[in-house]
Image (cartoon, rainbow, N blue to C red; front, side, top):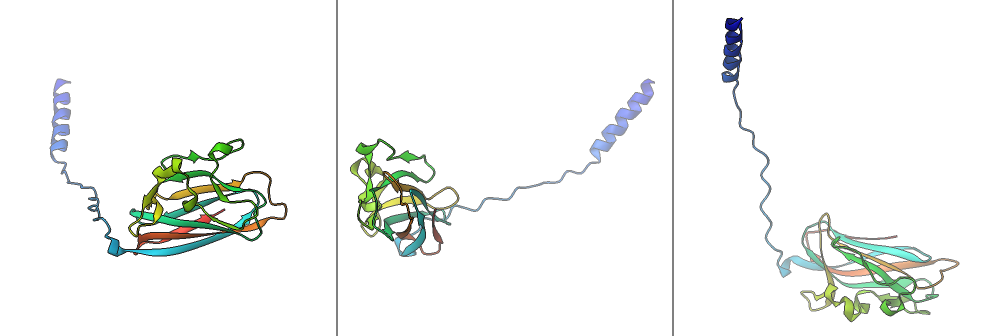
Length: 190
C-alpha cells in the first residue's frame, strides 16, 4: 500500500513538473494625455428646448475628460413667467447636489427669470454665497467650470417658485461654452 502511495505522489509530481507556465500580461493603460492648451479650445453654443410647467433639469456634458467652462446659460420662455423662476439645485462633476431653493427657502432664492419676464441667465445670476462655483474662463468671463468624461458635467434644476403654467410654456436654453475643440458638448433638458 505504501508503494502505491509513493507511486501516486511521484506521478503527481511528474505531472506538475511537466506543466508549462505561460506569462500573461494585462493591457497597459494609456499614458495620461497632456493638458489642453488654450489654443486647443473653442467657443460653442448649444441649444435645447422642452415643455415647461413647474420644473426642468438641464444637463451639460462633454465627452472628453478635460475642463470646460459654461460662461452663459440663458433661459427663454415662450410666454412671460407667471412667477419667479428660481435655481432649485446644482451639481457639478457629480460632487454632490447643492440644494439652493425650495418651498419656504426665500432667503436662498436665486431668481433666474423674474415674474413677467421671458428670459434670464443662470450663470450671471449666481449669488455671492455660490461664488465657489464661479471661476474666470480663459477669455476672462465668469463661468462654471466642470470636467468632461464619464462622471463630469453640470446638472442644474430650475423651477417656478409658486404655482405652475396652466396652459404650459416652452422653455429654451442656450449655453455658451468654452471647451476643447476636439470634443463633443451636449446639453439635454427635461
